[in-house]
Length: 210
Length: 185
Image 1 (cartoon, rainbow over the protein chains, first blue to last red):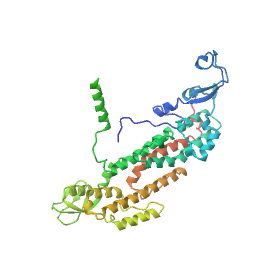
Image 2: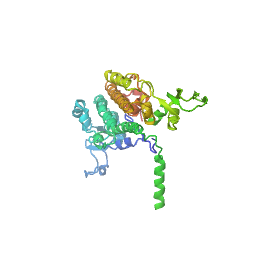
Image 3: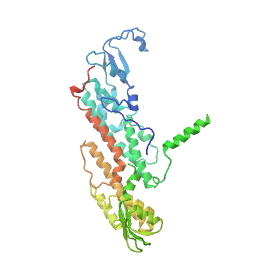
Image 4: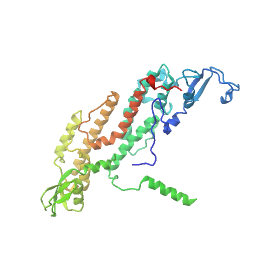
């Protein structure tokens, strides 16, 4: 079925996809940082502090896009700390059983954000990347089975614990299933108006209304 | 790909019909059909067979495999074997659906056949999912999917290729980027 809007999927890697809405949303997730050099006369940015300058060594939570701009190995303006879900403790949880974790609550962009963290040359990079991959593999079966079996029922409970990336996958699996079921029940043969035409009519009606 | 597109492709399969009218050979781009004589079996593509049937111009002879005993045997081997067993027809699902919907009066034990084919289908889909999962778990690079039909591939392909894409990207980020790729400002 053709749709008027075709979503651009997340970049998922060191580089984000410029046109992907998911990646735009992901880039404003907060990342704990430590200032390696003081910022003169920028105290007004820090809501809690009353000082004029932001001193060296203070800890702040900055959005990812800002951190990416400020982070530089040579100038050392800020250093990045890992969010707790990517640290050793949580990595152990993921390797034990990835299925029990509520990835949506733990930051809805677990995979994309995790891949972005690899930009900051943390010593634990290899482990993080390994965990991301293993988590995906571990959760794959559950997503596949639930998306291919839930026909005509409320899926909100199934997707509640899924990461944004996994939700896109779930949707793909659902459309495969629905497509097949529609065909099997003979609904695919019925000719219906394109969704584009339908929404066009609605807009027309709305315009005449005002 | 849409399920109805797969069905369209399946409509090229040849089936045997027994017409009740007479007509000379018809010359079509896809090949010559006929001649049609009342009572004499003739091979036509499925789309034509269904059209003739709807106008009550023919009786459809069910394909040889569309038979309760044969299908039971197919279902049992499918359950027994670990790999996919060859199907009697690459479009068995579509053929069953179309023939049973339009010509169930020409097919003996139509309901049983429907159930048997559905059982076989379910077994195969379960197998497909199982193998997809082990494929992902072992991080294999390629897989050989013999004897899978187009319809079966079609139900899982979008989901599966998308997952493999994600996995590939996650795996490439495992490798540290080469020095040449980092950009200096």
